[in-house]
Image 1 (cartoon, one colour):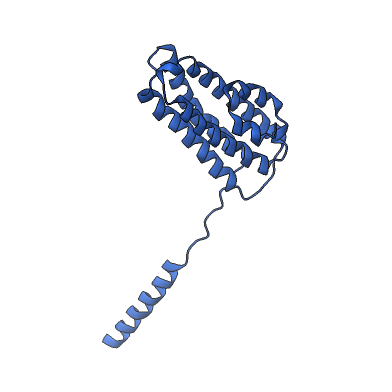
Image 2: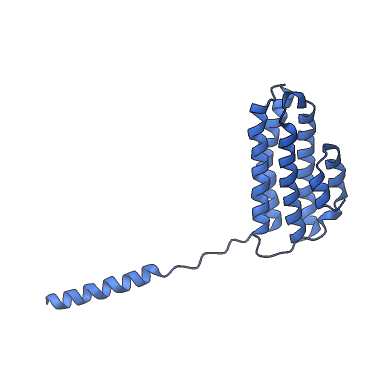
Length: 173
């Protein structure tokens, strides 16, 4: 009787660990370039108005602007990672051109305003350089996913006054 119970216990223990150790296949998350760019726009729409408020209220300083620009860079870097992680390449220029142009327009408006108070933010040049690098990477990854981004000349006209050279280089302009 004890032997039969031990045998049953042994088989239950053995098979329950086998069943418990079989992993279920993870559900593949479908993501598209438009999803990534929409997420980027959402993240930036939370940060850019804060920078605009600091500029309009004349309270922009290194201490107040730096964390917000770091948030912008972080959002751009997250978008770059997401774009490079897309398993399915492809999309249309229409899917990409509108969000890229809107994002560039919003950033240009905010950073143009910030340039007007550059004397109050001595580290602004370095901060904008990091934005330049990160945005350039987003555009480069988007161009890899949907070739033809470099034809978005409207983005170029928006970014040229800010001196964001890496982005213009990414666009081959």
